[in-house]
Image 1 (cartoon, rainbow, N blue to C red):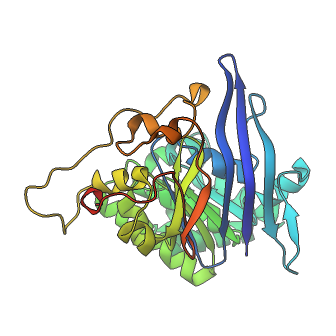
Image 2 (spheres, rainbow, N blue to C red):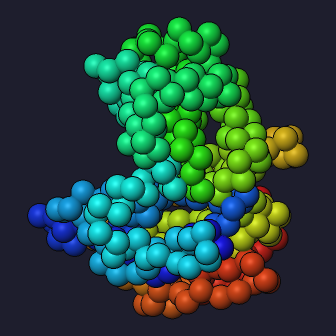
Image 3 (cartoon, rainbow, N blue to C red):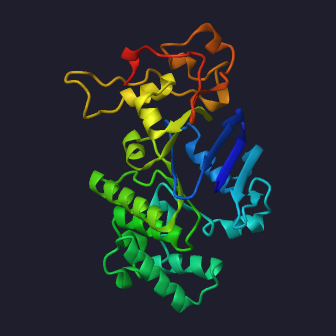
Length: 332
């Protein structure tokens, strides 16, 4: 297994009190596999990924417990949660790379694209400037940037949104990482460019044998690319399983609500989309018991008293819910 995260908890210590942004999160991702993480804004998706790279601003944030185990070349495991900062700098962008949500704010607007690409190779691979430039042009060509030899000298504002995202992907792949984390890689892109970006990530994953963690709120994106899905709510994992298990047999009312709130081609004519009632809770003031119970039509008394333990539905499919089953008519 390439990456194993065990009981990861990341808290932010603010004036309002302690905010448990991520609580006891455990997941795995292997080489050649795509793990999709879904949930509403504020559910802990991005914080989980930033925690893996130790990019949580401290203060106010801090990894308070858990292990982040990265497999080495000889099969040994290194716990990134306690690794020295110098070691983390050698891992970021090298063994683990990340595509951030907004390329316009992730790329330095004052520096040409070429400089931002070549410095990655100069730092991690100790390449000379000419060799790094040649490698960068090759990677820009691979990710679909036309006339890469000239566009490498452009500033970020001279590129379209889709091209900036391709530059971010090129930057992430330059050092041939083992793990790629893509945080909302298709946000604010039109559907045609979205499809191109997803195809590009899939093609590079297959060509390079990458493990991929794909963060999104769009179940349609997950259906296209992921092998397994992790559903998060209020900083916790509420359901995990393969794509088929989550889409064909969702068990948590929140997962069912997400699925029913998006349009599907096989939806009977006249059937309305059903949004999930209410709003996600403030992480600084979580309700007792299961944090989803104020929005859940199937909540029972126990849901208000204790957080449900994770239980196995079938092999590879787990859910954290006191309700054993939801009526078939409530399914998506």
